[in-house]
Length: 89
Image 1 (cartoon, rainbow, N blue to C red):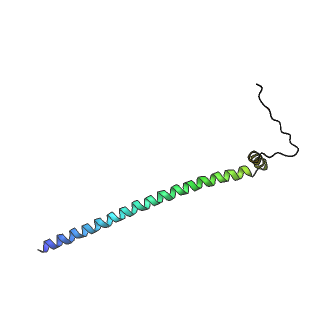
Image 2 (cartoon, rainbow, N blue to C red; image 1 turned 60 degrees about the horizontal axis):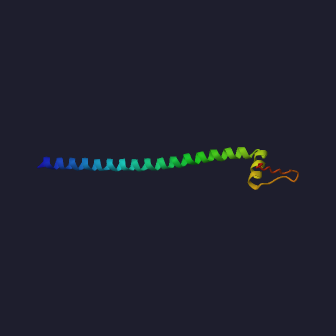
């Protein structure tokens, strides 16, 4: 009878340890998933930051800034002449 109780306690202890190991593994999977999402968001922000840094460097040159503003607004200086060419038919 005593042997039955010892085996019963051992089985219960092994079941408890197994359940706790399962919970730890499930926790690890959830944390790994959160880490992957955070890493993807961080990588996207780093890429965006690099693109913005390149644009800042490009537009820090006044010639590039003027060129883009002229393209977007069809602006011309008062002393510029506009010539329109059409193909002959």
